[in-house]
Amino acid sequence: MIAYLKGIILAKSTTEVVIDCNGVGYGCLISVNTSELLPQIGEQCSLHTLLIPRDDALQLFGFAKQEEREAFKKLITVAGIGPKSALGILSSVTVDKLKEYIVTANSLSLQKLPGVGKKTAERLLLELKDKISSIETSAIQTPSDQISLLKQEALAALSTLGYSRQIAEKAVQKASAELKDEDISAERLIKTALKFAMQ
Image 1 (tube, rainbow, N blue to C red):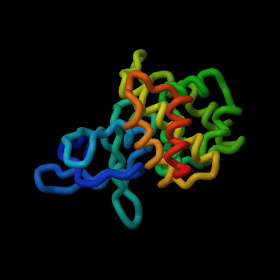
Image 2 (tube, rainbow, N blue to C red):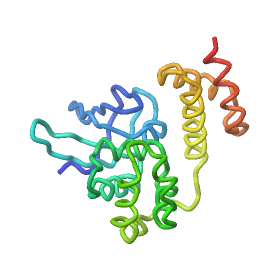
Image 3 (cartoon, rainbow, N blue to C red):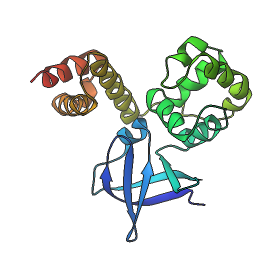
Image 4 (cartoon, helix red, strand yellow):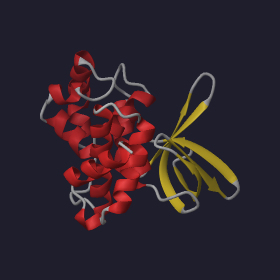
């Protein structure tokens, strides 16, 4: 079982990262939230991982935080939610927010997550209400966590406006670089990103 990796990032996208660990490159499927928390290509990083065997291959999933790994493990125990669906959910919502939705039985908010319909939302509430609360999450967000969430909000806003994922990502990256981190708000980031997307 591969539970943890530490090495140099060789390649990275919003859904996958390749890490060089002493000359061996490990490809990990990741959530958008984890991608946002990882450093740049060529820099060192560490990931909590989970290896899932399939009929035709072995899939390695990576997580920037242990709490996300635990949430992923619980999500894939629910009927109708596979590994990629679980990553989609964790790309769209923080673990804290997911816990809140489930503990408060917020079915409508769960149904807004990708791949989650009414029946799946009901299964999530039924099967995870007692399990999800056991995941320990950070009560205090670090500045990098807050910036990551703002970027996700900006990406979602541009996607809603019809921009492709590639254009939205480039626009948000340029907007983030133009604005000082301490001055970033969701509204400012979205407006600045929209300016770059329209160029």
